[in-house]
Each structure stands twice: as structure tokens, then as C-alpha cells.
Amino acid sequence: MLSKRNRKKLFLTLLSSALLFIFFALNLNFYFSSFLSKNFSYSSDYSSENSKLRYMVSELQAKVKLQQSYIDENIELKKRLGYELPKNINFLKAELVILSPFTFTSSGIINKGSSHGVKSGFIATASGKLVGKVSSVEKNYSEILFSFDPNFTIMVNIGMNKIPGILKGNGLSSYIKYVTDNQKVVVGDKVVLSSNGLERYPGIEIGEISEVKSDGGFLILNISGLIDPRNTKFLTIIAND
Amino acid sequence: MINGNIFLSILLLLFFLIIPIYPNSGSLDFGGHVDASMVYLIVLTTTGVNRSKVLLGILVLIFYLCFSGTYGYIEFCVKILTLYAFIVFIQRFFWQNFQNDILLLATFFILFYSLSFIAYGAIFGIALGEFLNFILLPLIYNFFVSTILLIIIKYNSWPKVKDQVYQF
Image 1: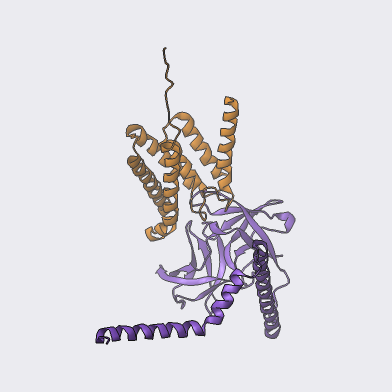
Image 2: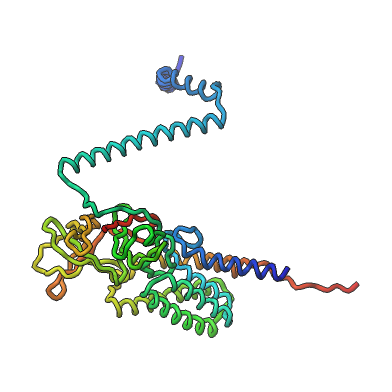
């Protein structure tokens, strides 16, 4: 006769075995098929690599289609809203080829010059964010002043009310000056390039107001969202002839 | 053979000098945070100061100055001043000890960034917080890259064994 303790042990063993059996029985097909495909199907490194690449190609094709749908949607929206990019605006692709390794360096050389249509004063962006401004142009290369260079200045509009200000570099970062302290500017206001300035750029968003300080009747506005030019490689030059 | 070695050394030196001016070249830069001129100055001075090394250091600075625009002159002057102070410091207190070399590196960087802060603060009115925010990553990267190069060059050199003459 089994003791009470042994009966309990036996009951628990049977119960756990039953649970295990049910679990495996339900998933048998899965394990079996996995086992078969792993061990008995014909495969080689070459074919597995090939299938991986095919999978990647199909994934990329899907992504391209998605991007195309975004472009189409964008064009459609522009048509509906009656938005037209000024005809004088062109986008040139350039590469930052030389950058001094000095810590506080605030300029670089790009591989496009006057022969490619670059002129002094053109804006340089990367990933839709402001990098700087073309300061001097040679035939096959140009110099770019980064947005934190002390010589860098550009007119910007702040917030919904398009309050005008001047974005200026101070050697380490950029800030907006010459906004009178009676203007309502709050943290989080969008900053866009001014289209009313001499250069007449399209209204490209370049960042957000991160700090508002008052100084002698004017506001000093710090801006966040600017790209670190030292990490960029490929630039878009906005040409406005 | 000796001429060949000298030629290779000069070629290697030129490569090390020129490559860091190309962004993302993968030589010394880590996301553009490493100041190659600082690293070279440190390596040149901590491995022993002599006239040719100082001249080489100044030439490196002048070469990089050519690509750094108008305000690069401020940094150039600060670096020359730091180099001078550092050479005086090394000539008076030079230790063949790894721990002290690390302290020397830290002193060099603190001196350079302090002088830079004074110069930039006086000229552009930079606040301390803004300055620290800007130099934090370059400081860390420069320190670690300099330390690694120092270990490789100064403390991992080929063992110097004197020729022994045997008499049978």
C-alpha cells in the first residue's frame, strides 16, 4: 500500500507528465516540421545566403514602394494646398570633404564650387536641418561657415506669428538675437528660415526655441534641434538664383 | 635600408598628418570629437622634448590652421601657449611613470580648455555651462585616444637589449 506522501508524489508526477504531454502533443507538428526542415531539407550556405539577399531585396522593394507613396501623397497635398516651391530654388547635393581637426573649428570645405552653380550665401542643410552657409566659392570647391561660427548670421521667423529675428553663432552654438522683449516667444516655438530676407529662402524649419532670456530690452533665444556639423558628411545646398 | 626606413617614417607621418582633415576618415576621429592636433602635441611632448619635436608640433598646428577659418587663430594661439607651458612643466618635472603621465595628460587638457574658456569667454561672452556642454565629449575622447596612443608608443616599445660581447 502506498503511503500518503508517495501518493502525493505520484499524483504530482502524473499531473506534470500529463501537462508536458499535452503541451508537446499540441505543438508536435511545429517541432516535427522544424526538425525536418533543419535536418533533412537540402540547403547550403550559398542558397541560404541567396535566400537572405532575396528577402532583403523584397523588403527594400516594399520600402521603395512606401517611399514612393509618400512622395505621391506629398505632391498631391502640395497641389491641393496650392503650394509651389519658388522656381528660383534648386537643391544641390554636396559632400563635406575637408574639416580641420581643431576642437573649435567652425568651417569646412565642400566639393562643389562655382562650376556647379554654388554662390556665396547659399544655405547648406543635412537631413533637413541647418548646417551653415556658403561663405566663399572657388571653381571646384567652396567654404561653408557652420551655424555656430561667429560670422554666421541669417534671418529667421519664430512661431506662428512669424516674429523676425537674427540667428547668429557665438563660436560654440547658435542663438537668436534682436527680438524685442515685448514679443511673445515661448519655449517650443518653431523657428523657420525667413523668406522675407535678402536671400529669399523657402521657409525651412531649423529648430525649436529651447530657452528664452531677456537682456537689455531684447530677448536672447537659444535654439535646439540644430545638427552638429562635425558629424555630417553629405549636404544639400539650397541654391536660389 | 636606413634611408628606406626614414622614407617610410616620413610617409607614415604625412599620412597621419593629412588623414584627420577628411571627415569620417576613421583615423583618429570618433564622430569628429577628437582633436588630432592635441593628440599629436601630447604624444610628441610626453615622449621627451627636443627642438625638432617642438618644431614638428608647431608645423602640425600651422597645417591644421590652414583649414580652420579666421577664428582658428584663437585656438592656434591658445595651443601654442599651452604647448609652451607644458614644455616648461615637463622639463622641470619629468617622470618615467605611467600614472604620472596620465596626470600630465589631464593637466595638459585642463590647461588647454581653461585657456580656451578664458579666450572665448572674453571675445564672445561664452557662459561656462555652454562651454562645458561643448567640450565634454571632445575632452573625453581626446583624453582616451591620447592615453591609448601614449601606452602604445611609450610603454609598448620594442625591448632595448644591449649587444653582449662574449670572449671564448
